[in-house]
Length: 488
Image (cartoon, rainbow, N blue to C red; front, side, top):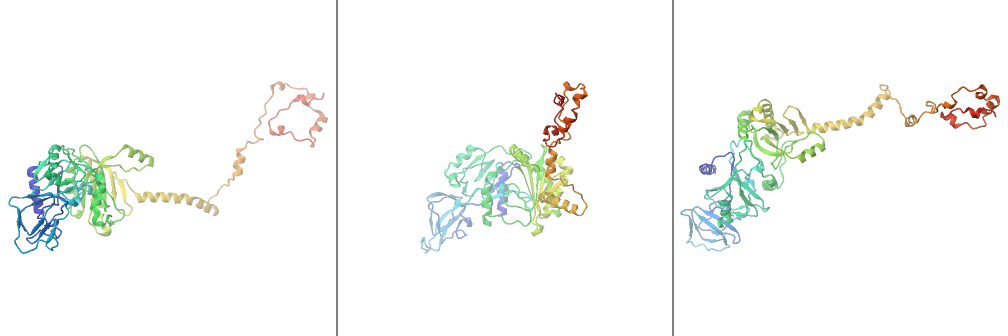
């Protein structure tokens, strides 16, 4: 199987120009000689009767001559014969009965979907150290797509009516680079048998010319991709081996290890930096079992501030960053630890030599008991630590009154009681401290003693306790009018 793939790669390099974009190759086929296309998982023999569903559309490539007892063919389909290929009738004594055990049925070719990552092969170098995010396992908008020559196929382009952008596509060894050429082929009878569904294909002739890389563009169909990937797990992600597992952008399930989000300058070259990481870190013996995925992503940076500030940042948009994901095959509690050590070494390298490669600061997250996050400047914090500090602060504030009361009772702290009536009393104006009276200048001249001295008779009247006390006089807001102190 690997030799077949190598031969396809060599053929691809002969017909296609070399570019930084990867190519993705369609794996399944509807070839007659492919045993996986038959319900008995074998190629039909001379005593078999081949059975095709009459209402199914299919395109079948036949690479050699086959002797058969009988055949039930589809109403709408085609057989593509290689040179010298064909069918011959078996002249034995078998009865071509549809209920015979010799019936062998061709499986439904509509089961293959464009969005199933297991049906694509990617030309990744250093597979021992490099892997792709799940959303990058199917063709990205800047990829070249290959359907191998001498191979028939049938692909469901999806039910959502989504337009799939590609850089180029090769079918039966013919490369299509413009929409007009591809549209003509898709409108042919063969094209209609090979591609079905509500989706469509569109070619973007301009390749990715940005040295920092280009976005894959499959984020909007991540749910479809994950649905196919998780079929073998019953539709749910398996439980990770570590605590505080991480979920990178474009990945269906959580992983154990580290995630780095790097900011970059115009001098950054993604392919060059990938080679440096492989040679400097991942090829070392201590990095055995560690794998890396690196790509450009659109991400909302982590904000360590108020909710209002985070909301404003989300409204401002996302930032393009380089996502670097490191994971390993460590068992049980050791899962992710080797990857974290490699990530820490990369952070040290970024601080010392990152500027020479156009790499700036960013964020890093580790799997573990608390799921740590940190900046590349060396200052680090964990989400668990932040939560712990908040809880400690709340408990401290709750315990403060109890502590003060205990110290007061033991005599170590003296508390001054302050009652509410005292506060209310202090809020009222003191009548004996403020004299709201005033001097009348009309009576400021000296008066005769007979006028100012009321005499003993008047004094007796003023001192008579049977009269009520003058509230005005006691209030502090009064003056003495001498006119009413004179006997007439």
